[in-house]
Image (cartoon, rainbow, N blue to C red; front, side):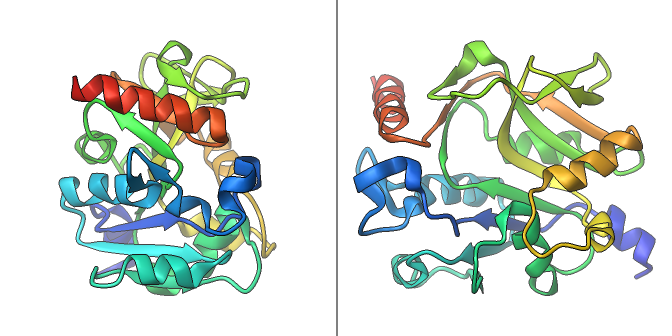
Amino acid sequence: MSNALMSDRMPDTVMLFAAGFGTRMGALTADRPKPLVPVNGRALIDHALDLVDSAGVPNTVVNLHYRGQMIRDHLVGREITFAEEPEILETGGGLKAALSLIGAGPVLTLNSDAIWQGPNPIEMLRAAWDPETMDALMVLIPPAQARGYQGQGDFHRADNGQLTRGARAIYGGVQILKTDGLALIDQTAFSLNLLWDQMLGAGRLYGITYPGTWCDVGNPAGLKLAEQMLEDTDV
């Protein structure tokens, strides 16, 4: 298969970010990694993997650092490839370091610290992905539909889905993106914002709007909001 065709195929791998220290969670992450913090009795990473399983994505790569063995033990029996990081590499550096495990072509990336109420965002991305015009496609959350989020917003979305920097929508932590541009970043630890900046400059960063509710589980207050959101769903 040519490099061009491999770059444009539908992604068949999810990169799940699970390496961070989770310091904003305080005492909750003193003895466990953030992805193992329970939300309504199930670990955060299990909620994230529910999305992967439901969407039928065949391959999953999980990056590890802080208390990584605990995550390995928790996921025993699942067909998962682990990418152990000797130091925190941030999202961009973590993805770049795992490219040998992911392979060529676009990849789905998923943060492990959010709870979703509504349609599966991975399925939404795969249905809307257009590699002819896009280098990345991300799920955006309108601020009115976000819980637990303390930032200022990330992007403005035009009617055609094209993105610019702004505060009208929040990046929900799940996307499809081509990884070619990582080779142009001469750093080891860096944010995916550097890759997005390349795509923004080329007019090839796109987003879709999530119609449901999303909760950022970044601190204990966000955890309580996520649990309430799930309890309301079960009623």
